[in-house]
Amino acid sequence: MIKLSPKLSQKLSYLFLFLATILAIIPGVLIISIIIAKGWSVFFTLKFLTSMPTSGMLKGGILPAIIGTFLLVIISIFFVLPIGVGAAIYLNEYSKNNLFTKIIKLAIINLAGVPSIVYGLFGLGIFVIYLKLGVSIIAGALTLSMMELPVVITTAYGALNSVPLSFREASLSLGVSRWKTIVHIVLPNAIPGILTGAVLSTARIAGETAPLLFTAVAFYTPHLPHSIRDQVMILPYHLYITATQIPNMEENRIFATALALLIIVLSMNFIAIIARIYFRKNRKW
Amino acid sequence: MKKNKDVIIETAIFMCGMLSIIFVISIFIFLFKEAISFFWDYNFIKFLIGKNWYPNSNKPLFGILPTIIGSFLVTFGACVVAVPIAVMSALYISEIAPKGVRNILKSLVELMAAIPSVVIGFIGIRTVVPFVKFFFNIPTGLTAFTGSIMLACMIMPTIITISEDAIHSVPWEYKEGAFALGATKWQTVRRIVLKEARPGIIAAVMLGIGRLVGETMAVMMITGNSANIPDSIFDPVRTMTATIASEMGEVVRDSAHYKALFAIGLVLFVITFIVNFIADLFLRKK
Image 1 (cartoon, rainbow over the protein chains, first blue to last red):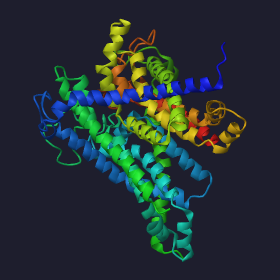
Image 2 (image 1 turned 180 degrees about the vertical axis):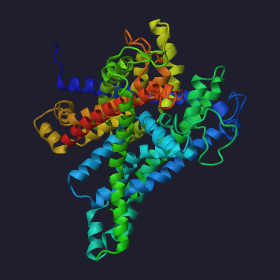
Image 3 (image 1 turned 45 degrees about the horizontal axis):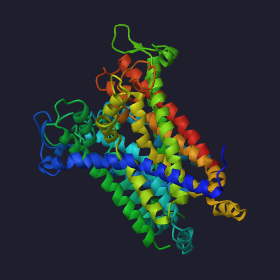
Image 4 (image 1 turned 90 degrees about the vertical axis):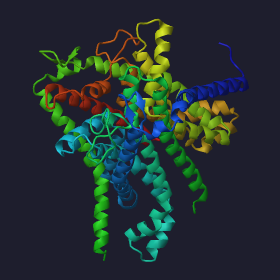
């Protein structure tokens, strides 16, 4: 084997690592570009976004799917945010370093790893059948909120943890109770981080299909949902059925649905990334 | 003296902390309950290593071996493609890229991680599936191989992000030590940084595997959904997740078939639990 000089081998390795990085990023860039290229013409007729589907989805728009996605996501974050922040407060401010805390942390890690389809099974069993909510917006939102919980706890925990200890000590030394210190000192400083995490987990959940297959979605609804007990159409599922189940579907319409989904998910992520950079620059410590 | 209101709130917060444990246990108990009532009538071993999945025949057979092999094949294939590329780019982003480029790359990778799996599946159908069919000259492009390629694209950002964290957290002093001995930057990265970051990188791969095993929509759309034991990775396969997703909609409630699908859910739950547990052990080792 030829022995390369250290300098040359460094140059070659850097080149390989650089190429690997490009290779890792290309698929994502390609996926996004293809969808924009093929989807934008239908997407920007705008009527596509604001009208009901007609003729068995072959014509009309995707309004109910957009509304359904937003409804599910908003209701689920409404459930999960207080609980997740509460759990994070417990872990960061109250818990002692003991076995019980370790078990909680292990539980959170495993909740994060449970496959989304298993959440779907659980949601079907508990919310749809046992609690008799039926296949509905509320059953789907509850399933999603369970799935979001570990992400919300982890990001909120990180945000609380980054508030310096001296802030708490200053407040406690003035005789303020622990809870008051948390409410008036710790939480206000952690809010940006908590909200960033909430937006990120919402973005992830907006693209989920599997947990909603048996808990919330409908193939087609003739009208917009009237109550949280109704079934809904959602964007990811709509994309799935139009891409695989409906023959003679016009290509550009499917790509436009994918574009709508991508715009929702990526813009929320983008907002979260920008917000994080902004808050890091402007924080008080 | 604590005020009553504080005590109530602090109890509520404690309950929030407890909730994660309650959720994990209740998911397990719930799956277990349905699965046990299935195994009451159907031999557990026959379920695990049975070669035939005929849930609707007169004498139904519920063997999940083909779907276990399907899940394993797709996961393994995706790892073979994704892990080397992801670890190399994590090294590049963390150690070699200039700081400005580093932040841009990190944000870009994070955005890519957000692409929904149903979108990956859809693009797979329209691009890689016909390509594989044409290129390898096989009857269908819906194969385990195609699934592996698309899942590799999906999982790379996750592995990059977590291993990049591990690589970046190697203490600066270690590198200084190597530099002081006259090592080049690459020698330092390869012999010191990579070694120190290994537990974190292994954890990243494990977490990636956990996600791959549980991935549903993309594999259901591009691996062909055929519940037979494949001869090679160019055959159509069906994963455990896809079996649940595609059959739960039509199944009669409380039938053996229905319970069998929950039993598959339990198998998935146990696999991901173990994989995540191991990942956590490696993360702590850091």
